Length: 52
Image (cartoon, rainbow, N blue to C red):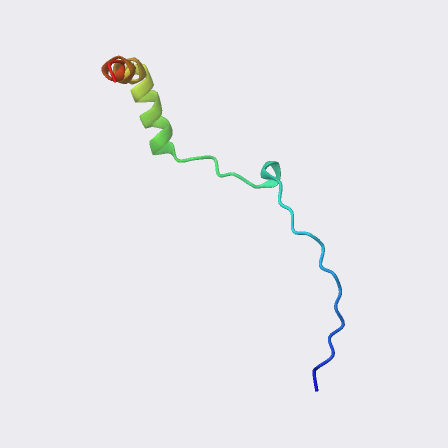
């Protein structure tokens, strides 16, 4: 004898990316990004890898 279950449909679980809370970031990485950017690291890496 099987147990009877009243099945109710569960609504879809949808989470939109815009609704997800984000942290403000980390001060260390913000400062590192500024230092690397001010030093021109992007241009250096692009020039170094251009041949490849």
